[in-house]
Image (cartoon, rainbow over all chains, first blue to last red; front, top):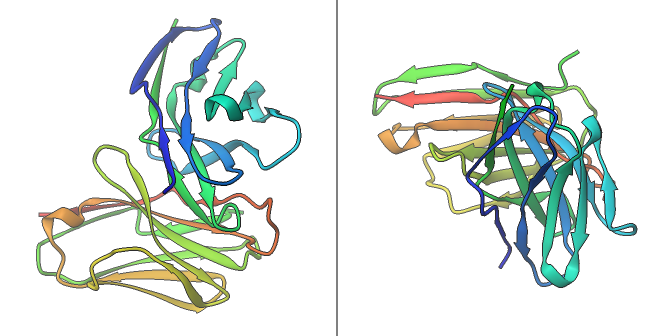
Length: 114
Length: 114
C-alpha cells in the first residue's frame, strides 16, 4: 500500500537560511511524487512534481526536490527562505495512473523568523 | 479567473442537518475530486469523477453523496451531519488523459458541525 511520511511536523528557519523538508514514501512501483504548499485559509498549490527522468526537479519559487530511489525519499529544498514561504508543506505520492489518486503525508509546518 | 472554486467557504450547521458544497472548475479538466482534511491537516481522497463517472470511491459513509451534473461541476451532499464530519473539504481537478497533469485545488470549505 502507498504511504508518505513527513518526519518533521514543524520546522523553524531564519529568513535567508537554507531549507530542507523531508519526505519518505512507500510504493511498490515507480512513484509519481509531488510537493504542495498550503498557505493559511488557502487551497494547495503545486510546487513541483516528479514523474520520470532527471531525479533533480525544479519547481516554482526556487524550490527543488531530489528523488532518491535507494532511500525512498523526495526531499524538498530551497537555498534561501523568504518570509512568504511560511506555510504548510505536503508531500504526496500518486497511485494508479499518476496524479488521480494522491496519498498525502501529514504535512510540515514551516515558520520563518526574521 | 479562478480555476477551481468552491462554495461556501465556511459552513456552520447543527448535527442532523443536510448540507451541500458546490465546486466548479474552468480549466477544461475531465476529472474532479473531493478531499477531506481533518483537524490534524491529514488529507484523504473521498471521491473522484471522470467525465461525470465515478472512478474513485474511498471508504466514506453513504451519508456523503457526490453528484457531477457535468464535467465542470462536482457537488458534495452530506446527509445527517455528525460532529466527526467537521473538517475542511477540498475540491480539485485534473486532466486524467494527460499523465503529467497535476491536481489543481480549490481554497476549501471549512465545515463545522455543532
